[in-house]
Length: 215
Image (cartoon, rainbow, N blue to C red; front, side, top):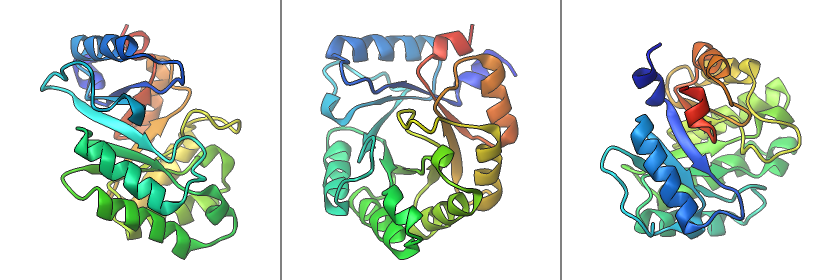
């Protein structure tokens, strides 16, 4: 795969708590130079202090990183982000609902965020696949479909269980069956790993090492 094609899979991401406005500006400049699809930054960085190039989409996170926020708070956070310029929302679901098997609760919170950030905003649902069984992954993906999401996403990159795996990406892709996009995120630091994730079914990659991947 050519670099120009691979770059269009990449969301260049900066979600470290210590990130500054100048760090975000540097991220955007690098992402534009590399030809990435989007940049993903913390919601407190919106609206951006610098201009976003027309070629880049702007993503942010909601309920991040724990997912243990009240659904109404996640919805309000999403609405504020869209009003502040976000094109895409990556929301973390409440893993407690997944472990409790409360499918209806997962659907409700996704649908509430979806209603607060309607199309054309893109909604991605982070399920922390590394912390889940295959059965729980399937349930979370089915809830994302039912709640009106556009993508399922493997990981925040902050959970101690780990980030993306080829197995999880393949299972996400099989479960959503092309109805939703699949974003692999967490631990994708080199080109070979990125290509493995794409081969497994990822349609987007969240990365903090875009330059290294495209080197």
